[in-house]
Length: 550
Image (tube, rainbow, N blue to C red; front, side, top):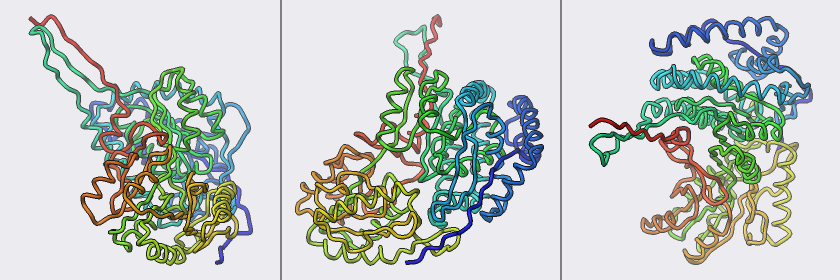
């Protein structure tokens, strides 16, 4: 199994500005009723654009990165320089590499603590104008325009995503479409944030419940879906009238800044959507401790989520936490095994197994175990490892870094030492690649059954009765995603109701969509993202009583 690698290492700093064309779009994408607010921000954007153009060396470096990645536009990564130029102190930088090759893509200057404070103050000022001077309709038009620009620049975004996350180009293209779908959904949903008129017990009063934006919000997003995890949060926040400060993973900041450039081009006023990059411990603590931030939304590990909740408690913030999973994938005796294998491949091996909803524990009825293992092994063996930017036929990319390779390998070695049978893979490939692995005869004492491996490893065990399957599936502190394959309608309802998970996929391995509530129970998080439920996370309910009317 050969994997292409680059011998040379490229190093570049990326940075940027707004164009006159995009500023013009800003003015045309808002209602006449907020035109004066748009003009107020135009001067600021013009000044920043002039400063960015003056930094010709940085712009040149950004163009070099764009050419290296085969981008059609050379200005999508310019905002990274804007963050660098805005930095008032500190010399730390973040190196962004391609995990498939080890090549350095860019070096971004880390946001300092002083910068974070300045950014938060700016976010508060901008949010007040965004909520009060832009109608819901005007905000929706801007979010809608952002959606259109993401679609129009899909190929460039996909190439940036593949370069820094390593996922195959086809998967990155799918992620761009997924990311865009949240903007499209919330652009419409933002117009439907309705309140209530409540019948009063007095003839001289009227009671209303109105919805208002939470205020300044902060999002901490992961590297495995560097585009979609931002739009799922920011689309709802901006449509609701909130501002947002996004702290993307230091592994994948370029995707975030490319999204930010398109948001500005769509007409998002300065300060409404900002990005910080750097030390996750320092920045996370600052965001949680700041009284300016009224909501923290996080996607990542359960361990970090618990820490952020504790740090947010002193200022009694609202929190949304989408945390780790340990997803069971149940294959009943009456299941269509071929369909189950297709679902397993979609759920388990997407992004090399590095998603929070990946099937982790395959709980298969003993009567169909041999058939399922044989067909899943054949499908896993057909996957092609490699660098997605060089070969579009690649279906399996690398793991994000060497530490993740070590974790996956430790889980496999632990399982094999305790009696698991390896049918495919089971070992490291070159660099940060790991062979797609199928293990059977797995038992409860193995790490692959107890923990989230976050890699391309399918761990299979068997069951006899439905009660056994439910007991095994629910024997975890995690409760995000679960799957069940059965041809019996009654059984599908029974499993759906008794599985202790926030999401249940019945006869499908693809469960994420913009219009549905996404989130977990138990230690897999609090709150929901997507659909009308995702919008509710960014608004407060205010009770208004008007008296003296008799």
